[in-house]
Image (cartoon, rainbow, N blue to C red; front, side, top):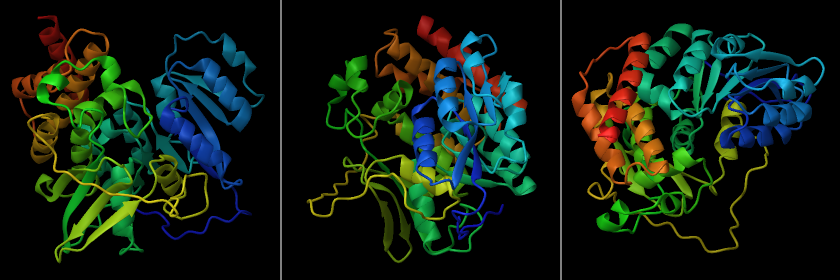
Length: 405
């Protein structure tokens, strides 16, 4: 694994070509904002969406990409006739796999939601690309496979999740010549992931059980899509981030800790064996970790919000309540076990969240269903890529069966 940590991005150099996978989503939009404010240092060479053809045409007119990829081949293709002259258009998952392998792509920003991101991540890393990863599920489902592939092919994996980017930034402060996120060192005692606590941080168990969809979608600090917002409310997002950190930084689950920090100003911390703690602070704005990854850890001015130090700020920390929020226990368990635990947990959660959003189950059934499906599956320590997708399909089917009952 290698990338130029201290590379100066010159305004006179050719722009860095970025493939924005998930261009119509929240992370994709933030990435395009970073690109637009890069003063020519970055360029959106590829825009990929699933079905949002009208949106991608609008974006293509602004950013003039070389390629537009629409992964759903059955969409209405008529709006795509309005694409700028010279922009190639491709359809289907296979086209996306091919495009992210192209040598003219400098960074692949992967921001689609779900286990479908694993296939794209595999293709990018198999081609030795630099992958800026904003898709938790890829490492959750296939962490050991992706990290092995990374070592073999010599690409780079840069975290975009604010928590993992924060840890990476803290570690880089003392390893300026590092070549991967796996730079813990024997002096690191633990990694501390912060969590906002979501909208139900102060709610009782009984009140959480009866929470409505509207209640769960009221995140106190972040503006995200519905699925991720529900995951934040249940703390399943933190469970997935625990698993992600286990693979990304190459450490055991017992050296990962979660702390509730409602202000979402400290994005995560690294504690050392002597008791010192390094923290990364910034206003909640995903453009900062995105820019840090797209510039391959070079720091340059950008559009992100800055602290107003003329105002008072407070930093509160609380231990997580595993009884009211049992999802985090599942995350530690899956991180500890590895193997097939991550893919099964993620698949069960996706189906359960969809069922809650559609009024088929109550909020408290989300982690309960995940627990049942984890217990029902036959654990495998070293699954293949094809086996991971098989278990993903199995877990979804089993979860749906439980919901139907």
